[in-house]
Amino acid sequence: MGHLNVGFYVAKSMEALAGLAAELGMPGAFAANAEATLVVREQHIRFIKEARPGAPLTMTAGVIELGEADARLMLLMRHQDGELAASFQTLAAHATARDGRAFPWPDRIRAHAEALKVEIPANAAPRSIGLAPVETQASLARAEALGLVRTGLRVVDAQDCDAFGRMRTETFMHRLSDGIPHLFAGRRPGAADTGRKVGGAALEYRLIHHAWPRAGDRLELRSGLAGGDARFRRMIHWLLDPDTGRPWGSAEAIAVSFDLETRKLITLSDEELARVEGDAVKGLGL
Figure 1 (spheres, rainbow, N blue to C red):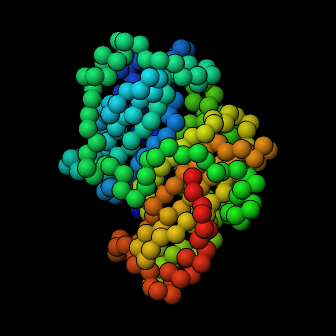
Figure 2 (cartoon, one colour):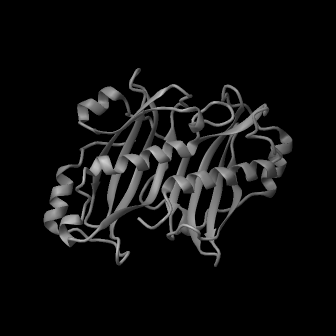
């Protein structure tokens, strides 16, 4: 596509999270011998300005709010000229490193957090995806009933996991990215209209972790379209345990098609939009 993969962005956000943890007074939060860590439960991501391989990027981080045992954090990726490349509103739990059990923040970390308070920039706020609490509808049985496409099937490898044996946050995003070609099966929206090479790009994502697989656990990704318009498409992904049918995670994305030569967004013709909308799954959500 010519731009950095979405999994790269999430990996960099996790590096920024480790840096923020250190500023909060948890410098070894992601080390193998840590007693306490930060477990990402959810991320809202805005992809704002395209970054190409080799682009110099920096990240800053701060605290939006602190709960009893969790925190809503703001991680911002910027280009060298200061323009925002991507934002990551991250909900993380203060948890025991080994079993991921949440427990209250100590006063010393609360004091550090107060000094790191930030506001959400206007261009980093949710735009097309809400952040209301979700009771997931994801399950293998539900995926079968809705006819969701299987877009991935694999086993978690040790290299997919963090120092505590849990699957890393960026691995979730990498699996979603790998599954996109299977969802469209060679019929990416807009390709029939232009007769040119068409790529896709995500503009906004919401990732929710329901459980954390470990090495040897299996992953099955089911995906579907949930509507859109001539320019934007809403996609839903469920990362499932094919052995139990329970969800590991779910995600919602807003994506577009663009011309790989001109780098311009493609507006679908009425005929192409009707075809794409015909594949949408009514009632599909997180």
